[in-house]
Length: 211
Ligand SMILES: [Zn+2]
Image (cartoon, rainbow, N blue to C red; front, side, top):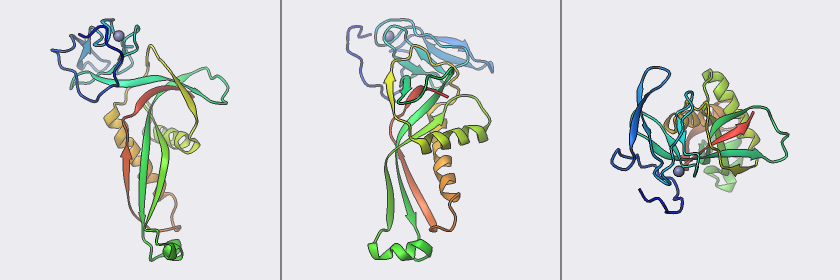
């Protein structure tokens, strides 16, 4: 390991056993998962709460998503919401910088009125999507994602030594983000006929946020 290197940006590359020593650990469902024994950054011992798919080094805060495919470095943290009163509980959310492009039918409804402007595409830049990573009913998770993503809260990121309660992987969060965006448009009938949308998501951060 490169013990004295400065922290590098997490990559999405999976870490092989050759690079990171692994041990096998059974999760709550009895599935045996490979968990890193030594932090690839500083040599510390990553810790994983039993109810979480995230192991974090308590020394340098290097964090790993744990799955059957092997551990993968991820960016984590604790989000301090601006202007919000301190809350008692925190829950993990995948926070994506998202770019959404909607395509509307410009020959119907409002689209026909806007046609003079030649706006074939309507973009929504600078958007963040907040996808709950904790266990819950799908309807509740989607409702929470919708409320947070509409609110667009500002926050400062601090290091987090542990991420408890995270059960949703980044891949699963991306699927939920897609459902959220598609569902949001279906809920606005009659404004313009939606033909489709393209959703681009950046590398997310897994953040503990007050709820
Ligand atoms: Zn470390």
